Length: 186
Image (cartoon, rainbow, N blue to C red):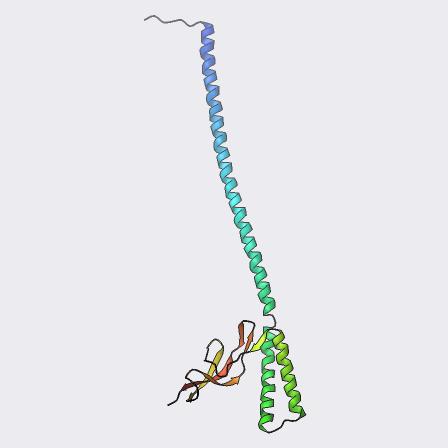
């Protein structure tokens, strides 16, 4: 077989086409590298966007929770003061009960009753109300059973005597009512 001779012009064309192919391959490689970088950048962007959205949602939830807590704090802020006043109110109740038992209905007793009534009204304006326990079924959420007493007049588990008035502050028990509960008569 005879070798074919290549002219310098043909050699340029062959070399040029090899260079063109190399350049095209380089451009394709660069394009693929750019595509890979763009995909990585999009993935990072999506991660950061997701992080921003979650952070924003967390912050909104925090704001709502803080606002709810502030409302609750204001609603029950005077609970400790009211709890401290209740023993004084109990003493006024005991004083008027003792005076009535002794048969005293004078001006002093009337004055003490007025002060007691005024304190109850002030407490009521602030959401503090007495627990109505007398004759009601015993509820451990509202009542504290101090003792039990057999009774034919009341069904078992009924509050037959209130020893110390209980109070609610809005929807919470401030102090449970201390009561005597009926049991079945023997």
